[in-house]
Length: 150
Image (tube, rainbow, N blue to C red):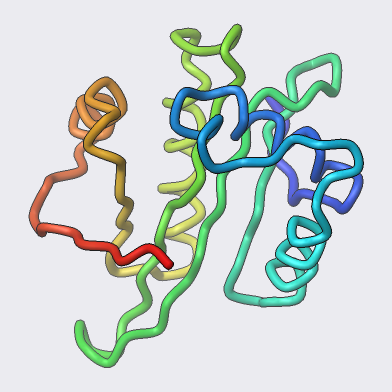
């Protein structure tokens, strides 16, 4: 597997991964052309040194997964850095084959390279398999998260 930063040409495939999911079907718009909001979001992420939007390719250079790392500077933990893992999505035909584990092995290594103090993520409560997977990796459900959608 090859890990690389996403490029503008990857946007449609990334959104396709998100949309090919029960929760993603409700919140993504996989139209051709894609709504301009996706391009605008990509440009903002790509320009931000604290963001890494990644894709994972198989040996045939097909995108089989994506995820985003956001680095957040904090005052607490001695002015430490946190990394937030977001938008982890593995292509349906690749699930259960170790892709997710490989993503998190890479992510943990990357966080350590950047001297991150805390690696954190959220997962929708409607994804119990994902939550169990994260727990097996060593993540603990130490906080109660809340969101407000607009």
